[in-house]
Length: 226
Image 1 (cartoon, rainbow, N blue to C red):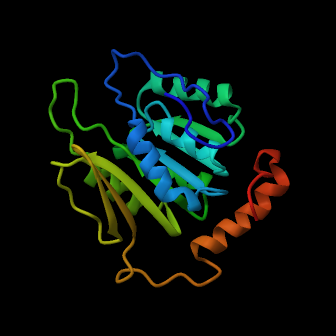
Image 2: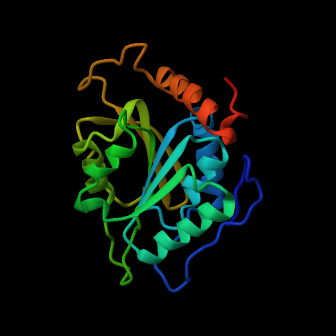
Image 3: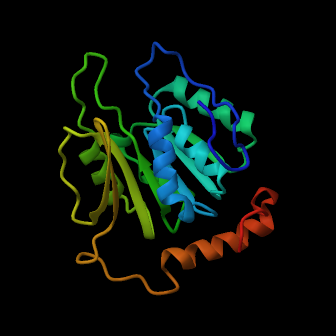
């Protein structure tokens, strides 16, 4: 695995043991997803649930995300992500926690008081016995329960094409991409359930404020275009 673009382009990403049931996002899907979300990455707050190797968040940091917060329930994954953050020089902008997405993630709001601009969810499709896990619906419910998404932000959900799930009323799917047996859905707030954010509260407004703050406090963000 390697970083595709940004300040760490071409740099290697360390993985976990092949004995673990961790399947990193493919380069093809990662490239396509980042081509879609690229304009929204600079200075964003990025949340990666079911982080695994940290591949997706590390790519976001390389492309200018102000902060990436990752969560995984496996100790080996957490240790590996910390290793990658140090290896790539992102330790000051990335953090990782050990925890189960379905057992309370409200504490993550403390690291992004205004919410996360981009939330990536790539839950495992099956357990070690090849039994479908169907974690997408419950994960979306947790994100809605704790109001983790920033106004104007969006969720990127990767799942198996045969996994069907309920979307919380708070969110709405607005785009779908298919890659073989994998589907990637893009969700944002359901306008019928939420008032439109004011100009001062929309995605561009929030990001502009974060660009100003981080460009003055973090030398690594000086390359971000204002």
